Length: 72
Image (cartoon, rainbow, N blue to C red; front, side, top):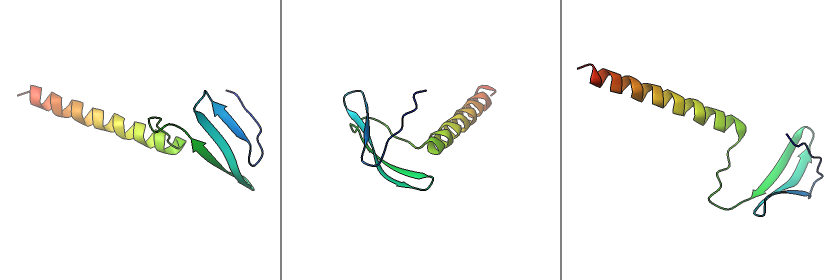
């Protein structure tokens, strides 16, 4: 993992087309702006975890339904 220090107004580039800019620092909270192509998915870490867990639940439910259908 790369760890960088940035000040308000400074940016980090990921490749040629994703820019992350620090827009505000208040105490322990940092506000960032992300400029990326529309085809790039951007999710907060906690939402990504929730989506992953929901997808796992859906797969388990679908597998169970398929199991019940095949039993007949």
